[in-house]
Amino acid sequence: MLAFMRHGETDWNRAQRLQGGSDIPLNRTGRAQAVEAAERMRGMDPGWDLVVTSPLVRARETGQIVARELGVELGGTYPGLVERSFGPSEGLSIEGITPTEYDRLLEGAELEHLVVDRALAVLHQVKREFPQRNVLLVAHGALIRFTVAHLQDTEPVRVKNAEVVPVDEGLLSVPTA
Image (tube, helix red, strand yellow):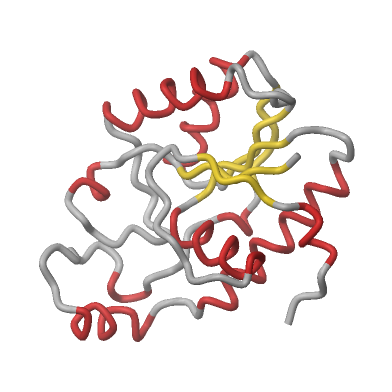
């Protein structure tokens, strides 16, 4: 089984700032969210064997907390799991802006299909590297939202901090565009 988990909250999440590749650490709430998520996951069947993460500190710390709390192995980092780049808009607040203003902020952002391509490559790699293991991939909101929507052929849905989103591995065999 494979599943994504979004990292816990950061101060930039709280302030509704675009983080992208900016390496922002978890805040106290984010650390508590990681512990709470691990508690919810503890009783899942089948259980988890391994946690891998994006190399960004907010994802890595979330993964470390979850792995420790679950008593499972913390594996490596995968650069393909980094958050979507928001280009020159990184760090800007989206609080209270209109949809048109938001679209303008995203003009310099990494294209969605490139984010999905990176994430799918990591999913395939993890599946090859860890066959028969239940792997939790700790990553970022936009990457998870776009990738799951692509796999399910649905509209992207917001992913909450520390939310776990299962990946239907049967959909991974479908060729990507």
